[in-house]
Length: 251
Image (cartoon, rainbow, N blue to C red; front, side, top):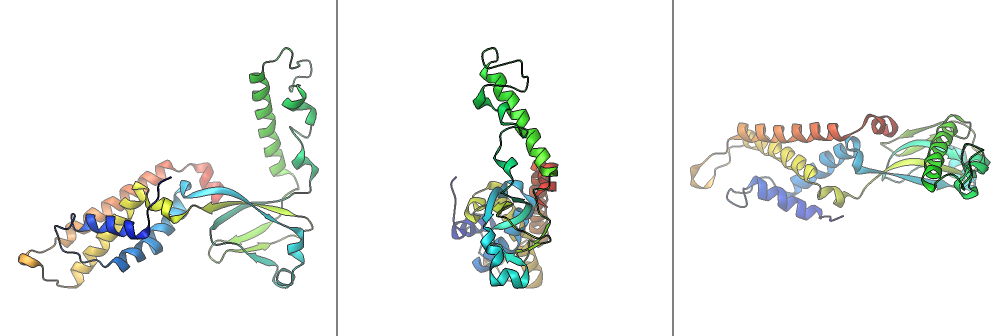
């Protein structure tokens, strides 16, 4: 995916605010960068489902015997982890089986979930459908099984507290932030940043009387209205793209 740097994003914002240099530049680059990093990025990572990707982190059983964990009973996870949805122990034999705890229902052995049908009379397409259904049911059953651990994750300080005794290797089911540069190139992100910067520009113009070449004046109220409209449009669009299932799983 194409990506742009923070400097290129700031230049794009300045081109919009100054109408490609027609108007004088007022908002400093440093302020635009601050708006991007402290407001825009944080909002997109919290609200835009495609700003996160699902990943798995492996933690060895040996990590639970370190001095830090035995003393404090928590881990500090990497900053890119936005949320942890599940912790699974990986010594459960059911995690290595195919189908609903029954490997003889797998495609590899040529038998479907109907014992009287074999691969000789069932097409590969039917086998694929049966296998998908069985795997989906197995995943849902595993969620209700006792192969997960209770935990608490603080997304602000990235502290993961395990609330039950852990005696196995574990895998964290996580949502991880994509690279910032990938968001910078997203048109909705750029519109959101421009909207925020227009609102900030209007605040500056209302606070300070800045003389302009030729004696013209900025219409601060009009700029603020444009910025608010852009921010609202982006928020409504992102809200419409987000699914309820993602919201539940990622929070």
